[in-house]
Length: 335
Ligand code: SF4
Image 1 (tube, helix red, strand yellow):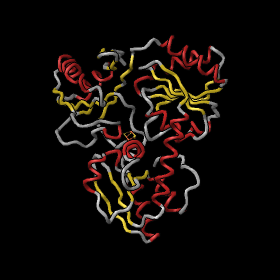
Image 2 (tube, rainbow, N blue to C red; image 1 turned 30 degrees about the horizontal axis):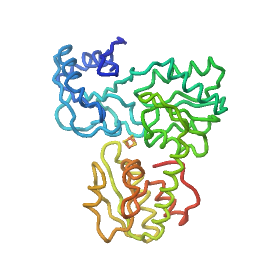
Image 3 (cartoon, helix red, strand yellow; image 1 turned 135 degrees about the vertical axis):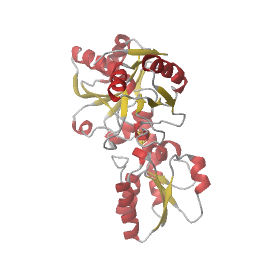
Image 4 (cartoon, rainbow, N blue to C red; image 1 turned 45 degrees about the vertical axis):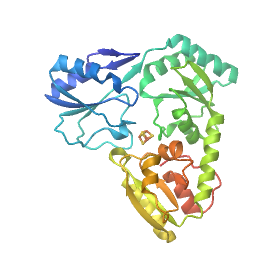
């Protein structure tokens, strides 16, 4: 495989594999998907691909929040979809999909200095056995961090492994780490990991701000809000089930919810929503529905709709409410 990178802003885009794949596929038209926040680099990437290969490049202007929305089945006659900046979504991979996933590494941070900060934080916190998780943009940095920690006498029980906002590898929970280091920008992934691993210390290490800190307080705040919303939903007898598209279309989850709702004798309505936000839900809402469950992206329920006027739950939260009829602790899963 040819190692070749295109520098865009503070990122390196892995293009060597793309050039090989375009040649072997005999592609003449591709759809390019860049993540949110990086779409301004579309012209630079399209110009590069066009100049190197002569391939026609179309640009996906729609939201690409994750690889769950990789355009596996988009009309347009594309020979290939080029999805940048996310690893393949672990819960959805249609057979024969013509998608090539390209890594996008953030290189605007000094790995030595950043890793030193993380090591110092862990030393002061008194943790010696850690796990490292990250996102697509920091895989090389996280590999560097692992080496640095091991050289410094730490045990790395797991990782680096890529996590998603709604998914962590199940091995993380049993790795026996005293702390999970989440190498990612902002709090989004640290919150998700913290909600799924329970009482383990979650250390957020942000390469963009070069800050390191304990995310446990934020995680606890999110869990408290979610427990309140689950309690609010206990009395609901009429539910709206939000159904998504692509990797966010999960019929087995929908079927399980429908089965439980029928067994309880509750009413339910299925809403198709390729994209969901507060405006979409408010527009579709009606007095007949008392609670919603989001089977598309569960983080929309957690991050964007926690304060909606009616409870909006993840599937795991809704199943606790419906199957147990009580709320004792937060479920360790979003699905
Ligand atoms: S958190 Fe939402 S956007 Fe991210 S991978 Fe999961 S379903 Fe997709």
